[in-house]
Amino acid sequence: MRREIIIFSFVLVLLTVLAAPVVAAASTSTSTSSTSSSTSSTAASTTPSPQDAASLVTVSSVTMDPPVFFPSEQGMIYVTLTNSGTTSVALADAAILDNRVNLVNGFARNTVTYIGPGSTITYSFQVTIDPPDGTFFPLFSVNTVGAGSINYPFVLTVDSTEINAYISQKPDTFTPSVARNVNITIANPREGSIRNIQIIPSGNGITSNPTQKSINSLDAWNFVEVPFSITPSQESTNVTFLVKYMNGNVPHSVNVILPITFGNDKTAAVPIVNNVAITSKGSYYEITGDVTNTGITDAKGLLVTVGSPATSMGKYPQYAIGSLAADDSGSFDLTFTCRDLSSVPLVMKWKDANGNDLSTTKVLDLSSASGTDNTGSSTGTNTNRSSTATTGRPSGAYGPSGGTNSLFGGSSRGGGISSFYPVIAGAVILVVAIVLWKKRKWLSLKLKKR
Image 1 (cartoon, one colour):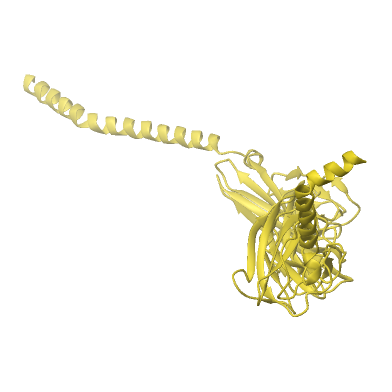
Image 2: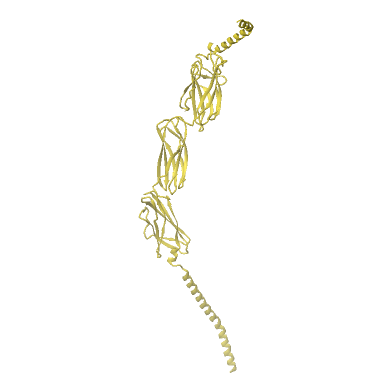
């Protein structure tokens, strides 16, 4: 009996040991199942609703090209949306809502586009804007699938104002074949920038340097001054400056007209010849004098020579005075031959500040006993103008046997017998003085007797 109890107890202990792992495994399985259920419940509770996901999609920017529209002008409107959430959002039916905005490229209805988490999407609208001028607020709208729509108002400006283009610098008058500076100013009074600006001058008998100018862009409320060098060859014509520019992708243009009239340049150098003296040197003549610049600007590289029928030769065939400032003077010395001294052209050549070649001719009439030095007009290299400049000279005074400065005549010079009149008079006076000096005692006695 005792043996049976011991065996039963042993079997009972063995069954208990074998059953323990099964109970533990079941308990572990139950715990794992509970944990998995809890995790699934938590995950389900963190997924955002469609409304919450759509609320994280916002309009981040609206840009326009052009920034400011002309009335009825075609352009582009770009609307960018950003999804700052963690879930993709479905979008459909994007549009701009306003009676004045006409969509050129409408979007297909019911077309769904997805914007992913952390992503952006840009809608491009090709539009035209109806007049009148003004600023108004169209509404961008896009539907979200199952969560209503996203609406965003933005500013749009319509302005029919053209750019301003005008001549800001020009000479009072033009000179044939002489380049003059002309500046044209482009001003942008619009609220948006313009781009691809071109200025093209044209006209009959007109040469322009450069032939055109280009400017990449001009911001709102800014201006730019563009210089040109205009050389006309004929009067009574116009220079037309064609100003082309782009507002967005639409071309625009304006014209600026500059009339061309010829006349004397009020700012030019004006060389005046004074103190002219001529001396016979046997087979040739030597002429000296002064040149004074009575103009406003400098005469650069001033060169003095004689013109036909006189022929330069000898020691000083031409004389370089150099740069002659306004109100300054310089001397010259020329040697030449000429059969007829009644017409000796004195030619002066120089350059202005722009490098234009200018010249003036003073015709010296050396055969007249009285005369004046008249000033000629400055001209370009392709224009021949002259003026008569005469100095007091006895007729026929400058043959090869002529003399130099007279004893009493200062800078006056003569030739032939008339050139010796002052010398003869001086000799007679000297002889009379000597005779009176030797006869002074005799004359004194005569006077006492009386």
